[in-house]
Image (tube, rainbow, N blue to C red):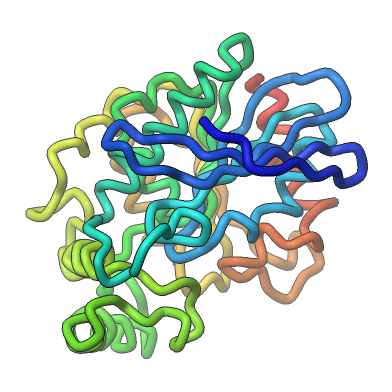
Length: 295
């Protein structure tokens, strides 16, 4: 571990460090350290192509309530991109088997006296199935953790995703040797190995559990900690049926909650709005209560 710099925001200390994975890849990590007594640790796993900074406001909120919060970038994303994207050899399973698993073990070894909670956003929650040490978690909270199989969508969205996974991804990635997510307005650019493997899942009715499934998918069955899975009406990137699909693959009981924005007097809760400051007094407070109850 190497420490890069320290910052302070409203008495929350932010320490940026690098953490090595088992295959010796260096991950960029931000720790949010509370000024008051530490109650536990929360590890946040990001959505695809989303840098850890997207979760900073949410992390600050959780840290103000007594938790050390850890955000990290997967290999090839944000601070964990150390070379030319075209030359990076990586696939989605590396994000789970290596990156997420390294973060779980680093968190446990660094803060071994505290419960370790997990919050997964979109693919971040899916990757938990590939981590051999996921049984070290005290609780698991999923936000819009879904299957990406295109036929689970309805209407025009279904055809957009068919075009994406069957045509656009293969053509653009083969031409450029990476996937230009930034130009398409959907986050950070992705290494070719990442997008190719993900696309293969999204063309399979069984998604990550189908014919392209990594052997490590068996680790999903060992999770026995409390699991709560949220979906949101109007979230076009994670419809209810897609979130149900992942939740139904757990061996343990999963508490499924589907939120209508009207419950919070909102017109919409988009896929990325979940972690924006406007949710502090409603959704974030609900997350915090559940984590406290399982601490």
